[in-house]
Image 1 (cartoon, rainbow, N blue to C red):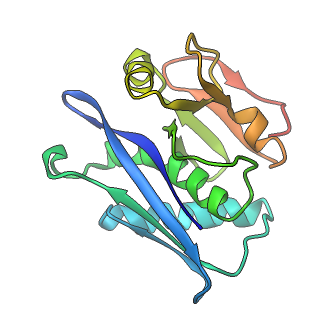
Image 2: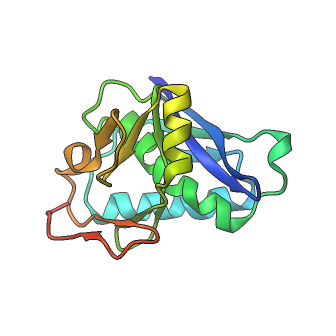
Length: 178
């Protein structure tokens, strides 16, 4: 199985599209993240920890997630790379069959994670404009004025101990058993 997902990397000019692509094969089981240099291992371990603490059953397969970074995006910075954590988690869970959605190829997801299961989303007008310009469905929990949004509560309601927080807002979605 293979798929791709769109996300954004923040530069001084604003958000830039980044393609995440990956696959699952019958090979030595494990998770591999490529394209993020020294940040890939930390994100991988966070994803594994979040998955294990929620006791999610992952098939015994090799999962390879790749981030297609273009040269014009410049040097990787932790402040920008962190917004790829949540999309990589969604991508991994999709390939593992945990998320009930048929495809991610036309979706955009952005956010960071902490090990307690808090998901921070920096959804703003620039992100919505990118989705509109490229006709992407936005995976978000925020109630926004965009016609094509996939609600995270619908996708992740069967997973315990997740909270969604919108960056720059006091709004917190809690107590939803997700």
